[in-house]
Image (spheres, rainbow, N blue to C red):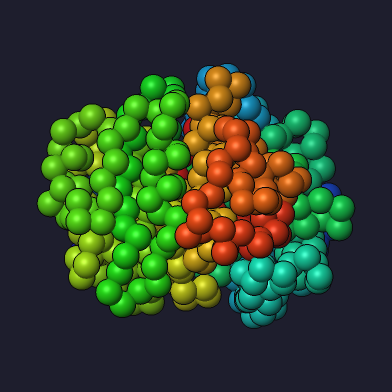
Amino acid sequence: MKASICRICLFILGFILTVGISSQSLPAYSTEVAVVPEAGARIAEVEQLWRGQYETYFGNQLVGTPLTAEQISATLGRLNSETDKNFALIYAFPQPEELELLLVIPETPSVRVTVPEAGQQELLEVANEFKTAVSRPTGARRDLTSAKQLYDWLIAPLEPQLQAQNIDTLIVCGGAILRSLPFAALHDGQQFLVEKYNLGLVPAFNLINQQHSNFRNEKVLAMGASEFQAMPTLHAVPLELSTITQDIWQSEVFLNQEFTLNNLAEQLESGEFGIVHLATHAQFRPGTPENSYIQLWQNDKLTLDQLRQLDWSELPVELLVLSACQTALGDRQAELGFAGLAFQAGVKSSVASLWQVSDLGTLALMREFYWQLANPEVTTKTEALRRTQIAMLSGNVRIEDGQIFTSAGILPLPEDLEQFQNLDLSAPYYWSAFTLVGSPW
């Protein structure tokens, strides 16, 4: 009862602050941001609000005192030193009459800016147009209008501050509409956002693991299925599982009949694996968490509400990768499931796709991603994903003459996959679907 009263009070306080701040001398959207004393209080309020949304959706109550805006800033400063990166945390809060942006950068006052042109309905319409275009193999290359509009609303108002502080990594904490947005494919008229920044999404900063560790020494559990009774065959999965784990990573591989819930639970209980790669269909659907699932062998499913029952947190698991996901774009509950995947599983980070890319395109991306993840120069998972996406965008990862070209070397395709090779992997459809959620480091 007390918790409910507290939430109501916080909501009322948030409304008062929002109205109060908006009615003061803050400018409408411009290229300059507003540094205001109330920004820190507003960040704490948004953190509490979104933490409550995920707790309610997943039915988990968290303990511990949330970090304040000042503590978040200090934590980012520590992680800057540990990773040699410059982090910025952006809160993007869609509201009926405006878009509210909040910015946290270490050793810099927090920033708040509103974008009146981007009311909730306007933002939803442009976001849906953008996601529809980018989730088609040729869609986003021909018309970048929506990609540019979203960039102007979400990034441009904060860009002077980002550039002044030499920010190279953006951590985006978005509200409804934005939790399933492929930020990597936003465009400033000259470049995609991923060409400028490492990118990661968080459900709320207080819902992620804030400790950096060396993930290159982890052992990989690679499991998947290529054959299904009522879903499309994933022809490239056997090669995907073998190629991402060979040479560089210590690993165990389980395919088809070995990809069962009991075997997954047994392998996790062993405590040997810091990276779990599941190459199979997965669906983030409207409704409660039990509607969303990861497909195992035959009719066996691992539903989103069952994730906590598995022992992911023993090490803890550094990274959970789902390589053939599909999310109900625009549905708020499906978005909570996608953005809360790492939180619900109890892993530090997750990489999953917003729509189902061809399995051959996924094979190429995953081969490059694991090579980049093992690169001694790479200090964060977001950097590994960005390097992968840039390699695809630039044509360094490509398929031609029956071979996949990546930084890891040339991989000849078996005959049963050659028929699928005519793919332009530089299109955003192939690389922008993959999103890192949770700890960026």
